[in-house]
Length: 267
Image 1 (cartoon, rainbow, N blue to C red):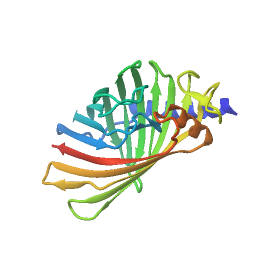
Image 2 (image 1 turned 180 degrees about the vertical axis):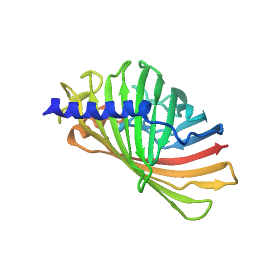
Image 3 (image 1 turned 90 degrees about the vertical axis):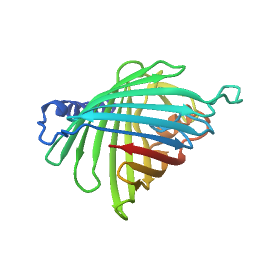
């Protein structure tokens, strides 16, 4: 059963990766663009895993693009990083991510693929390739596949939907939801965790985390946007619940509510 499930997931992943290269481009963006923003949040939650503990995090990001290609810089600054002696520490820049990608469209289909380098503090750096296929229709469904190949070998499949409701020309309510499947290739990095909170010796392979988010972007002038946001992250399965709790910095949480505000600039 497990082998058959993996086969289906590999087929989906291969389809998405190949589609990036075979689909023609009819609507490339010909104008250079750039944007930058900084988010101040009550927690750093990544793919269902809590990576901060009782502290505010600051996450700056910047992107530039031209003709469908873009590059992105993203970072995480923990204002009170967790330490083993539970005494806290000075604010620390503990992650820097670099992304290079290309996206295009074919009718109502949106296709994107790229590479991400995760420069991490105190642990080995990580590298991923990814591909996504979206449909420009109601709820904008998008399936994205991430493949880590450098240090934490795994597949992460993410299905997301989103919808925006405009209140005025300057304000809207943006709602989104996502669900994921985690397929680990290494029992040491992403192990299956039993109900006693101990690794079973097997790789994790099951549906993982889900996220519900709401944002209220408010435009100021032509270039500035302020967006309060709130998210709820929770496990989809009991296996995910055990794993999310196992890796959580607090050690006893498998679901999280967090939020904050993002200030952005684009031209």
